[in-house]
Length: 179
Image 1 (cartoon, helix red, strand yellow):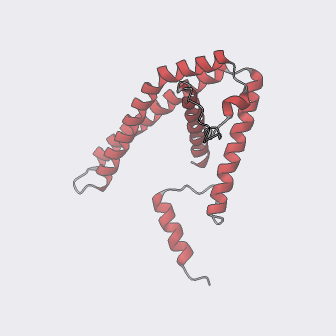
Image 2 (tube, rainbow, N blue to C red):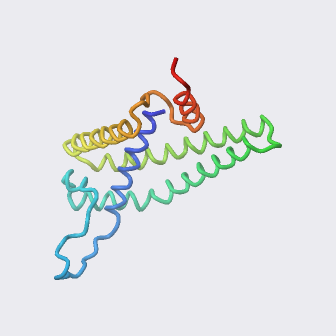
Image 3 (tube, rainbow, N blue to C red):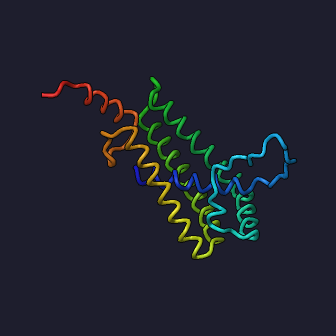
């Protein structure tokens, strides 16, 4: 689960960064009172050294794929919401929950497929050197996320799924008196 989380997180960051490039550049008038340039939280495209042609290709991919991925996200969230309601409803049957689980699994697989297609199309725009640099940046981001998680919860085991029930169970275990 944690490997899938990191993969999703990294992919999400990549898409977010790709979306930043999709926003058309706007020239703002220079204000003499504020000489500081606007904050740019991510410089991944500069670090990768994308050419204007590559930037344009990524913009086009994002414009074409964004509605498809968003629709898949909506279907997945809705399927999960319906499943959650059914699980805790007083009158749900096991067959209903199984069917809604199947629907949620299908929606999740569709979302994964659409994200993968988008990421692969963007990946094909990169040169081999840029791809190596991107992998390095992605690994650095994953390391930072892992460090933050470890810093926030030093007792957390890396292989332990972070599901609500497990967190509740972990709190109970931590509150028990030690023998």
